[in-house]
Length: 397
Image (cartoon, rainbow, N blue to C red; front, top):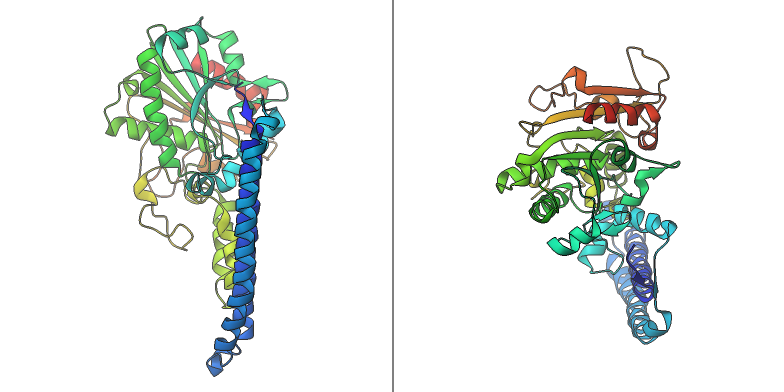
């Protein structure tokens, strides 16, 4: 695992703290103006005096906050050599992955050191995409590669759960190499899909042994990123797309997740009155990646030139499963035994995970024999349930 500078972590955290202080200050100012301006029915008679006071008071607070932030940055720069660097532990990696899932687009836009970049990895270390270095990093490279794409707010290390890792187990039982993706799950799914497509093109070009077959295994959002990467590869005529033989999606919200749609309704309800409108901004800190999960956006056209917090109908362009690829879907359900109506896995409905949709245009046609429902299984338990692994292994074998 690569080392990381402690000062970068501190600088990133301090910038977030400063921005949070400024945002809360602006929120309080907006509420102060709204309440202090008087009734709207009377034309808000006190709006002018209230704004004069609030601009002075809250402007001063924001200015002081900015000066403090600049001072912290200078102090951390001087402390850099003293703080040094070390190999991050799994706890820090989990926190960083969650932070990027919620705020990753903002971290990237503000060039915050805590923003994650995408990389292909093995055993927690980034793989060099240069022939000689990759040969040294993967001396026993196989002709079949399983690429594992994690879900929202997670990282490549979190494929290991309760002592089990689907990728490591497949590598030990089948003649395959397991490669993992780490990415900023707060970015738009289509942005991550395009970047993944480019990285796979580089990987295939320098893989140490002739690559016969590639398998994409995506958990949750990872299944959507994998589908998006396939679309990007087809649009750019990438060579790796011809080597893709299998796609497996574990609990992927192909048609969205109710929790994000619920978050959208909270935005709408809070914004319905002028007194609640400032508070609606609190619901809009969630990232582009999270709001993509409302309907399961996988293409640029699904979100570009749209207000991602605006209430509306499903805006997606239908994207079928990739041609010439054996596609499989696994859904978890909290229901313990088969019955007509199945609960979801706590995050993703069974129908969404299996690609089912009332519109034939949007429905993903996973053949019935390539679908599996894991009973009594929560969303994260798809990563370590023995029966789920056995099903994946049997499909790939």
